[in-house]
Image 1 (spheres, one colour):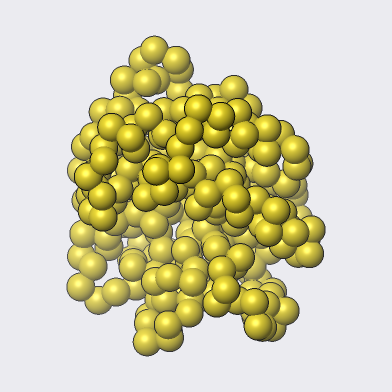
Image 2 (cartoon, rainbow, N blue to C red; image 1 turned 135 degrees about the vertical axis):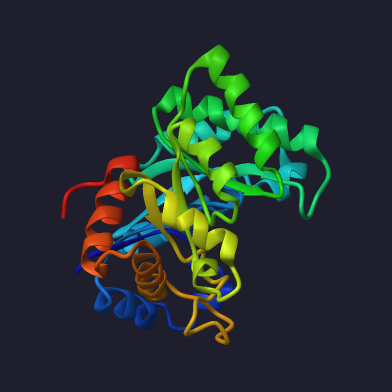
Length: 261
């Protein structure tokens, strides 16, 4: 059985002591590819180094919505240049809107639209962070696409309702579920995970955050735990784990244009 963790942050300090052992564990669980997200472009050299160290690791470059205070006139050009500098860059992001921890919507909108433009020019998907912002996010994407045309992408660590999920499915996006889908009381996420079409479904850990059941009490999440996310989503959808693994792995390879194994 093969799995792909489509959202990791193993450049964080949490992993620097035992990263080789972490890699051994993800390989033992059949994780054949990982997509490393990027919080801000200053992370690029470290993430690039990790992608050189681990052949199964591919990555993105972008600016997180909670870091838009860093946005300046030259950052769009910098992100685009970095994305073109390494063949293992397979996405722009993570970018998006977060109205749970911040209220600077206009600044977030500007940075997000600029990164959509980069993705469109480079024909790369976007990794979208969307927290307490589903309606403005869907409206913004729709308005942008009506003028400039569509961009492929994924709603990462999705926690929205089935209705909100449908908005982004209608826009052509993939939907990725993290360890939150394993939480007992996450009924809204369970319903959404059950309703996403098989060809639009992705899995992730968002490590080192959001450890899934049965590892929820462990403070550092890691890529090997995407197995438990897959297990829970398969149970919710009433399909064998091996079938779900095959579906989600094929989806990730298609969206991120990953090489065949």
